[in-house]
Every structure is written in C-alpha cells, then in structure tokens.
Length: 185
Image (tube, rainbow, N blue to C red; front, side, top):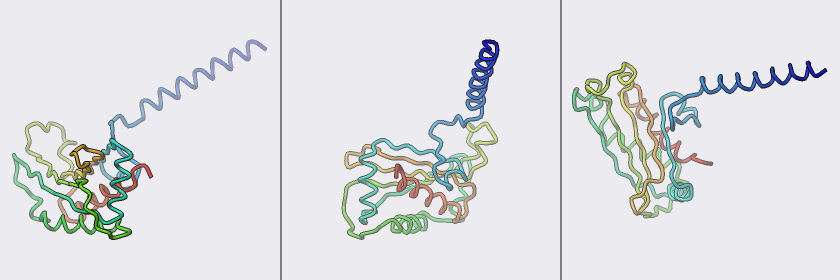
C-alpha cells in the first residue's frame, strides 16, 4: 500500500513540475502586452494604467462630453514618409473625434483639464537601429495617453497598425480608445 501511495505522490509531483515548466515556456514573455480585447489580439498592443481612480474619473469625463485632445505625427528620419500619401493629421483628428463622441452619453462638454493626446509613429524601416526583420514588418503605431491636470500620466496604450491605409489606422485609433474606455470595467 505504501508503495502505491509513494508512486502516486511521485507521479503527482512530476505532473505539477512538468505542467509549470510547460506553462512558463509557452507564455508570452513580452511585458505589458495587452490581450483583453479582440482588437488587441490582432496586432501588438501595450497598455498601462497608473491610477485606477484617475482613470475612472477620466472615463466619466469622456462620457460627459469632455473630449478635447492634442495630436501629432512622428515621421521617419531615415526614409521617405508614406503615411501622408494615405491620410492627413486633420483626417485622423476627425476620425479620433468621432470615436471619442461615440462614448459620450450625456453631452455636457465639461472643461476638465485632463489631457487626452495621441500621436502616430510611422515606422522608419531604414533606421540603422532596427536590425531584425520583425521590427520592419509593421507600418507604425498609435499611442494614446491620458494625463491629469498636473501632467501626470494615468493611462497609456500603444496599438500597432500594419499598413498606412486609412482603415488600418482608424482601427488602431478605435482600439486605443476602446482599450482606455474599457480599462478595469
């Protein structure tokens, strides 16, 4: 009887060790990689929340109509920009405004002092610092950030886009806002 119990314990411990090794070897090792939403699973997405209370407050402000923001485009330094052939910053701002308005429930247009901003980074495929083929696959990424009145970052998300066409960038903008508006809900 002791022999069977000892065999069972050894097999059980072996299973637990093997299972934990398997899980460790197969998990995604990229820190901060987000996979909460379907749109985050389609492309590489990183997100980080810093203050849950501030995030909830900023989400509430957007729902009440506080949707002013700033935007920018970071163009490549070592290669020709392709992005401007497909979409302008003004067009992206219109898309971003429409996306934010889709979350407005009360339309009170508060002036909160919270700072919403996004920028588009166009991947510089000729950058000498990019040595791997994988770093040259994506077309760019959208970074959406929310800061407090005191300029303290409370949330930041980065969503890749794979081509420069308007629809792909729009999808990344939508995903970035959806990521924020659903954060911890």
